[in-house]
Length: 166
Image (cartoon, rainbow, N blue to C red; front, side, top):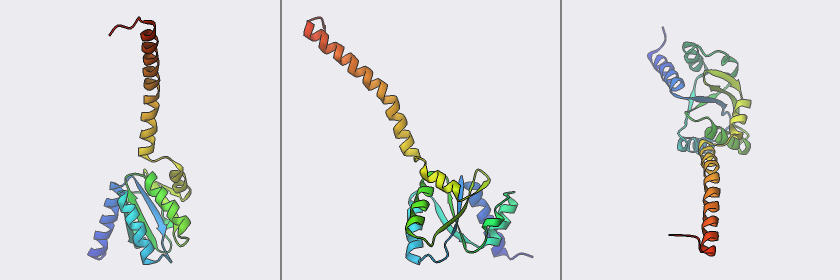
């Protein structure tokens, strides 16, 4: 019979999996406490949650949710980053892993599919949601501002010719 503490931990992990769009699995062995604290703060600022769980509890939660393929990544110490936005945390993790060689990105769980660390690198190269929206607005604004300049140039031309009526 499982201990109530472990049952609650599996329920917590399952709830976090269900509530997050993406989960990144990390090996944090050898990381210093200040480094982990710094990483947690950076991820928290982006709405991410950094938690360390026992591999057996993660596996039980994954089995409950029918996530397959995760077992091969659950070796050694495992920390999980849960987030509702995949790009920003992936950028933070990729940059942090470059600075801190003790951090190893094992895998990612995105839309119920398990992938190796290459998915994190792909997410890290994408533009963030804010950057994408900014580019989109600029794209929409560009033809309008061009049209406004043409109309203003016509107005100036007609004023010089004396044909413009206010």
